[in-house]
Length: 464
Image 1 (cartoon, rainbow, N blue to C red):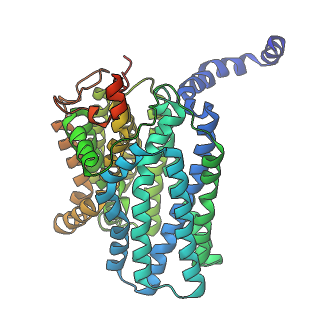
Image 2 (cartoon, helix red, strand yellow):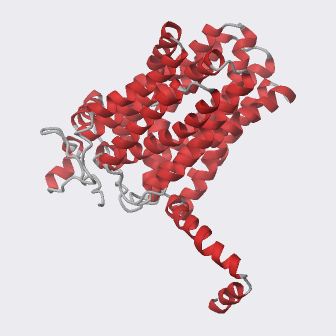
Image 3 (cartoon, rainbow, N blue to C red):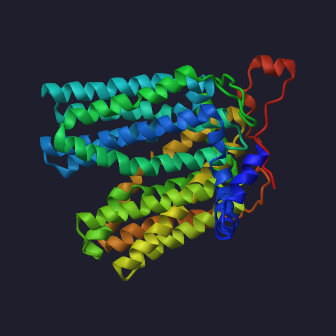
């Protein structure tokens, strides 16, 4: 092998060798940790399946909105459709997290994929037959949201099960790449299907898109990477939910990460503040608004790769700094005097916001005690995107009352306030934050564990 490599380098010109040494090798070196989680075969297949699944979800979203407008022509009904989906995510997050702590995540995800296929199939049948009514869309959106609550929490923890703590930052950040790619592929596919095949085929495409992740879940065995917690049965009932809420609120690092996640939801719901900023402030048409969305998405992919390239556990200091910079960049975008400056600031905002949220998510997962991790991530899903039924009307009301700049900038102000509130609690440089006194995950140990004197597995200790 060595003589082949030497031969290949001997054929390079001095300029080619110099360029490879100074440019491409550093780039590969930087991307290596960012793509490190893809070295795990189980996660690699899961990642590829998620690109298809997330794009299918976006395709269905386009078709649902189009169908509501075709049935009623009401913007209010569009808002109700979104609320029907988000309401169970907001209210059911803690209960979904408690379920994730009780059952095998892989089997739970297999069940949710089957349910998503059935729900998308029901939409396809209703539209194919012409029997669809707007109340049916509302009902199916609500049921889909109810399934999404445990599905979202389980996905978060399942990634840790696949890759372990050392590669979690890479895996979480690559998930942000999936989201941003799906924002391009999904609506584009939906638009093509609407123009050529019709609305029902958008729902068929979404149903089919869940088959790859279902196949991965059925064929892959759970891989317990380093730092992955063994599955323990947490107690059932409201007590488990209260314990999760109390644990998350009483652990300062988790509390402020969750508050910042909820605040950032005002930004990530781009369909409220950004179109008003594009049309009323910068007087752009639909093409300009679409270009703004694409600019944010491109920046988001860059931010996800930056987050994935970090080594070890994120420190509280890095999370609070990124939250601060994201808030400033949002305000800079809102205050931009020219459209060109707004585009530049929006690209930076996309990069910083995704970098921040990926690192905050990683920190929250690794700081949580293993027996509480599902409930913590259930609360995370409740905060982002679950809080959007609350935050989105606030953004819209602010934009109408004080102008589009104020409406878009509200996310930046909220994020700065959340970062300031948690500044001292996130002052660590890589040392785990302990839960408040009297609030631990110990009640979740089984009676057999207690009787045998087996201690609870601790939260992962970060590296310096």
